[in-house]
Image 1 (spheres, rainbow, N blue to C red):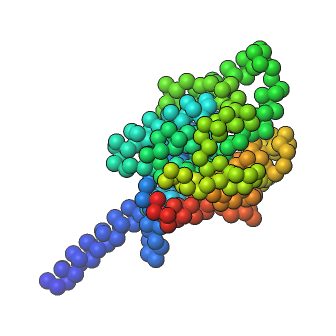
Image 2: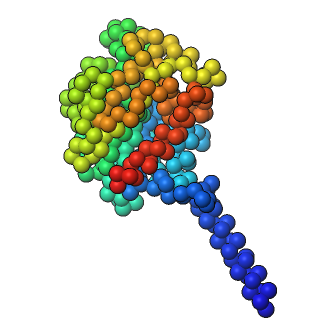
Image 3: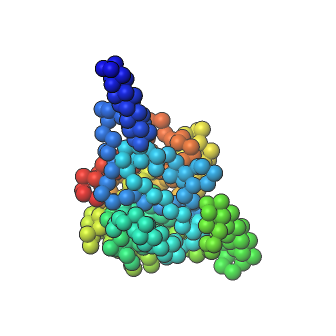
Length: 316
């Protein structure tokens, strides 16, 4: 009888351990399985021509799973692939309102890459009650010199402009359809114009919270009870095996100063600057392509892990 009871208890204990391991994925003793569990969920917002996930490949490659494996609640909305931060920001606000209604969470930690940076700043500006923190990553907070060059090379109203815009809009339609949002309307011209220095300046005048007080400096880390952070990189070519590096090296050559291939280092600053001198390019920032990055630099996933701990320590 004792053996039978022992056997039953053993089976129950094994089953409980199995379920626990399944619930925590690869998190097990002695790891802190709740290390990345912030008070408010993290919402990862993609950049221009981006998506949440297509054919099982996440835009923020491996980030969501890495954070969720140790307790984080992570959401990845799909906003319009090709449009300015005003339109994309409205997409995000709608998503956050729906997320609040379905999950019960009152606020969210917004993390935006590239054009996703101004996109989340827009949401924080128009719906501050929904936002706990804003973190911009390799963001076009002051625009992109490459966008300035590209916009300057193509005459306004020309047939070349029309051809390029149509091609990019078609690309955006394909991306959003594959990502499950075929109803989105693309406007590549507005998107590129927004990312020019002039477009960014107009936006910053409307949404200045967290803006640095000096060139390459920092801004207020907390405004209207919302914390502001930023990080980024300053190296275009980081790994010979990464197929995106050749393109980013070419585009980076049009930019004065250290840059990630699309955005100059100091133009990435906003709020509390965690660092913008990482040896990472624009794609490395979201652990693309397929996790290939500079072999002697911090793993991009580590930056997201550290930030989750940072947010948690602030009660966010």
